[in-house]
Length: 363
Image (cartoon, helix red, strand yellow):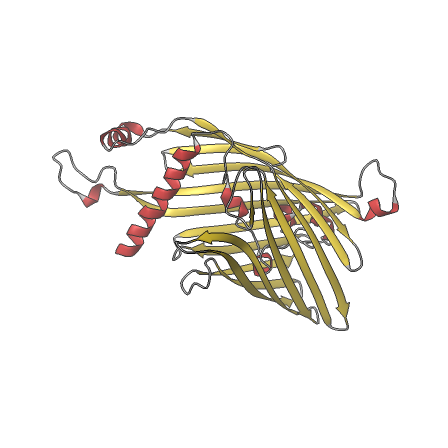
């Protein structure tokens, strides 16, 4: 219980400090990063290599153009995962449906939160004595509401290949809250396209294509303000932060032979918000590649693996590259898919594994 208390305080302190630092500039690196965690155990098992092949309800998150792969029934997907010894919880739900032969739509909801964080601002009573009964709790949570739409074909292009290209877009509404201390509202757009051939598939997504704007407002109250001033901390001010566009390009190869299905896909994420610790890192943009594999048998059981999140790490003697390996499995039971993924969020770590479960079904 004591370790959980300390870990909650530490995680919240890092989160709250990142919000304060983020105010200093308008456009910055790592804005709304909770939207980059990923959804669906299938995708996580393949190290998020999904842009060109996704074709279910999770398309609203990965590539809205993939919604054209939905059937005539209502498709739904849910996921729950936990990090940091179960303190940080990530929940996702989505529903999608073909509207007609040439269009489809979906709605998705994401919540990433840390609940029951101890508030120690009133730990000391007016006489300077510690009083644990004065400790309260609050939640820090990020929400995203995604409204997606897909259309078959490319408007104004009357070529044979254009009929096999699907396009789509996602409108995002973002709400972030840290107890009664701070909150922000944001809005942005994603755009996507996808080509599905017999054996090859291609996809492209521009996330935050319009740049996503987050307006932060703070209301610390007299007690918190006094504590900040006494401890020499800078009081946060209302401000605006902007998430700059990022592009994800993907290509895949697939085939079926008797009861065996095979899919391999590679993605590359191009960020434009400054230097990141990625495999290819520059002052203006960075490139983060990832690759995933899925092998299925009799369209019933699926085995998955992937590698991504490559980073350059420097120590006192040398520089080396770390990466994140993932594996997963999926089982189909008629109209229901049960998926599981195991990912290592560190390099050869024995304590930082994450278990991800998700469920997909047709109504």
